[in-house]
Image (cartoon, rainbow, N blue to C red; front, side):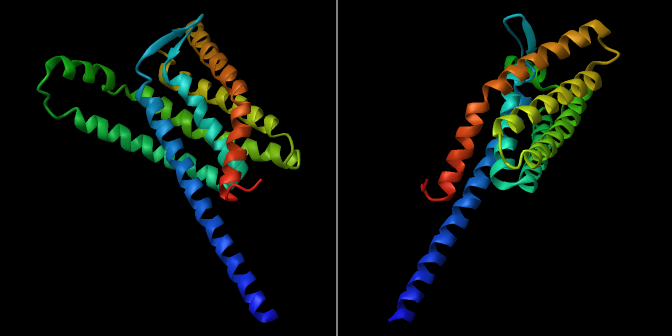
Amino acid sequence: MIKADTALENAALAARTKAIEKRHVTALAFLFGLFASAVVVTNAVSGNVINVGPFTFVAGTLLYPVTFLLTDVLSEVFGKRAAQRAVWCGFVAQLLAVAFIQALRWFPSIDPEMAAAFEKLFAPVPRIVLGSMTAYLIAQSIDVRLFHAIRDRTHGEHLWLRNNGSTLVSQAVDTAVFVVVAFAGVLDTGTLVAMALGQYTAKAIMAAADTPLCYAAVELTRKYIRGGRP
């Protein structure tokens, strides 16, 4: 009887473990997909320059902080390696999106106005593409590494500190690299500094505002993996 009970307990434990592993993979795949989508959409809308209050920046600036939020969630729940893999997945997705969009430009359109609009929006600007991709890869990698460095120093406490600290530093690097690679020699120094400050200020505000979202996303992800258990 004891052996039968033990066998049943082991079977139940194995079933629960398998279910947790399945939800773990599902959650990881979902966050990877969400991250790659955010990266691609950020670049797709960055051809539109907008004004928000006194700041002028490309529209992608409003969405880009979401990618840092997602790498922080991945780092917190799944670890450094998973977050770094997401960064590379986002980079590949970005390359593929650029390649597909440029390939489509060679196909004739039946609507001249639509073709002109498509060309104006997606015609490649090599320095901007290079600046965007270089800044992305450097900044996102710094974000992952700094997040875990702060996590180790604080012994896993103070999620708000590593969420904000890693994002504020990495986005400063992202802004500086992008502006220099994309516009140095094209715009004067004063304009470059003003552009960088405007973009970074907007990113910093959004990074600070997303702290509650980071806590919520981490808790929801962990809860889902546990099967809804507190």
